[in-house]
Length: 68
Image 1 (cartoon, rainbow, N blue to C red):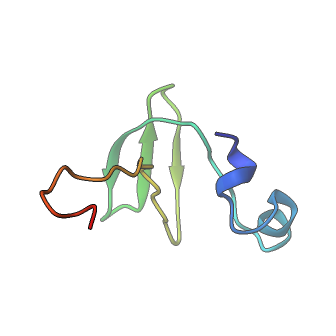
Image 2: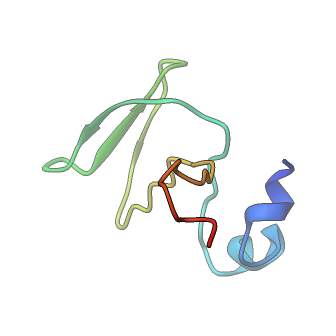
Image 3: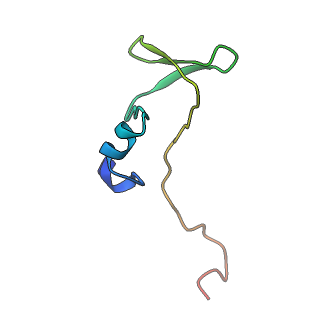
């Protein structure tokens, strides 16, 4: 899957709106009191508002009668 497949808008829209996208990056710690996110590469970032997209994959559970 490509990043552009999951974005609601193109990357230029987020940049124009002052929204910094940090994609394919592992968050190792979140300090909500200090509004600080820590990343696996040793960097960190202060935030005003934070949206965390953890990703997912859809599956159909094996439930009898579901196919009907």
